Image (tube, rainbow, N blue to C red; front, side, top):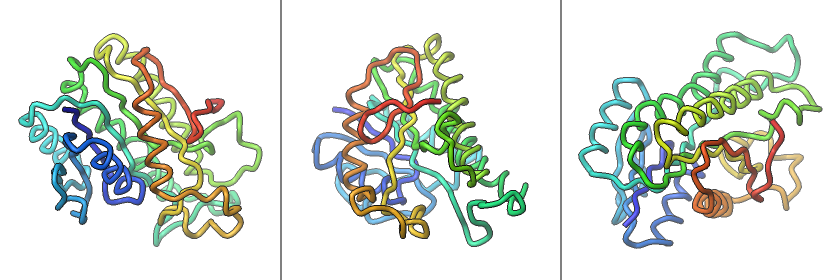
Length: 239
């Protein structure tokens, strides 16, 4: 029996991951974390934790997970923000706002690290667990030829550096943990909805397609003390 933890389970990719896992393995236990409960939480094999991702709530969820005597095989952090009612991705320097920048950095870069920090005691003795976070190709410094989207690009570049640094530490403290920064491509979710007009049909992926690719990739990787930055087609992305 394998256990899987989905953080950000109420988003399009998070929900699709839950469905994919329970279809693949009827004996799997799925633990779903989100701000609000969703329909997936009512399914057999799924346990839901409501969490707004504060330090205190993350710690409380972690304690409840500890009581489950988990054998975690995969952790998937599917949280993220590109826009909100208060801000949009910046197209020009004049649109850069420090307040929005801090919000984007907190959600996209700091939040996954808070979860890794909380979970590392549970992962120390695991034989193999892939800790996977949704990153983005636009976080690649080498690949940035278009500019724009200052806060989002910076947050994903920061996320990648944080995960790369954590991989070094995990190679000493939790040798069975593999870290993955995953680029899903443009996925038909609320995050990308305002920006889909110019995306070719064959480059706009369903959440179900991405979840399958995400899960299958995470199950292939071996613990090697490194961070892998890979896309939905399992191709490496330049830092």
